[in-house]
Amino acid sequence: MNRELVVKLIERAKLSADNAYCPYTNYPIGCSLLVDDNIIFGGCNVESSILSCSAEAGEVAAYKAISEGCTKFRAICFWAESRMPYPSGKVRQFLSEFNSALTIIIATDQTDRSVRLSDILPLLPEVSVDE
Image (cartoon, rainbow, N blue to C red):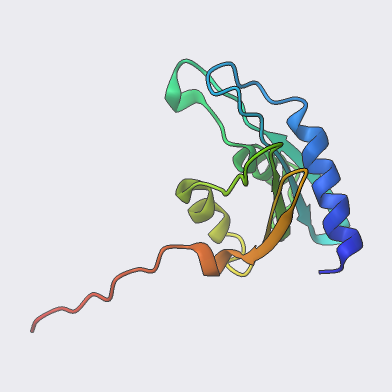
């Protein structure tokens, strides 16, 4: 992925963080999701006192894309101001349903790095069945 596109995704994620609703953690996270046709969807974390009603930034961006008929995910960027906002295991597993080779960009104002989703998914243990 070229640097110009990475910067564009970081900027969009940063803008999305402005809309975060996070009164409990005070940790706004923004997200941008690149799908086919170079369409970018933004998302942010949305917290609730009812924990099961909270949504992570990656979920929000993915839900927006899916609701618009876009399921070919190419790259996703997570941005937070001060510490690297790695996606949770739940979000990683959800994203893997669409593209396990998805490029994930993790960014702050000071730095960014890219990883492949398949490299940060937990490995499944081998299962053997005794006959």
